[in-house]
Image (cartoon, rainbow, N blue to C red):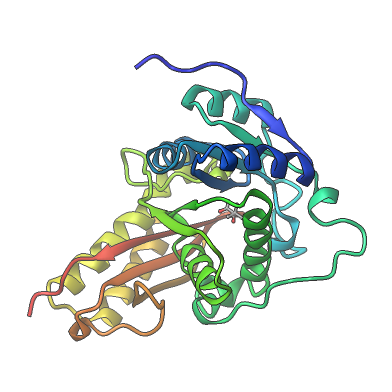
Length: 291
Ligand code: PAF
């Protein structure tokens, strides 16, 4: 298929994005939003394509959200490449880019944050205690600015997807959240903007995380005990060269609470681990457990 190479219109003020979306709404055109922090890769472009299958108009937001980073985290060095991002979005035919400056999103005197619990507790919530409050706050603002019918999120950030779904449910926000399966490299590494931090040696080690999660899922689906499977996965990941494992955990795929194979509910294996200064996360589904 021929690629579309026109420029994508980029808006930077709330007034302008509201006006543009209102025109589509008046014309009866459904709108989908793909929220991103830029440094776009094929995973993001897959989200755009999935959004195009849902709605006539697709807005992609690019905003590196300071409220979801702790002071010790990588906000300052988070990769930024707006020109490259715009070229990629033009090639897949996105309709509009919403790229506000931090002062437009959080003007002087800004004082409101969403307090998340439920799906936000534990896992990432334990290691990054303020992260999901910042994610929920910025997503709520993006939804109110863009007023989309759909917002699409990658399953790579599986807990984020659950937190956003819960917020939309709890606050009765008028849009549907759509999860899109993780896009991976041929060796299993989940695509992530942070993969570009990895040196060649680290890049070679990185797929070991996905391999270990698949082994855990396979063992549990075959009737193995989750605790035992997780323990050997942590050993395998450390032996492969990961510096530190924050967690490998087996959870209910919807609530992210405790999961029992006998429950008949879908289960998920989730992990976060460090390769030098880079923290990678990943997750895989557990197939129906053999009884
Ligand atoms: O997944 C991300 O890139 C970010 O957490 C999001 C959803 C764009 C909010 O800043």
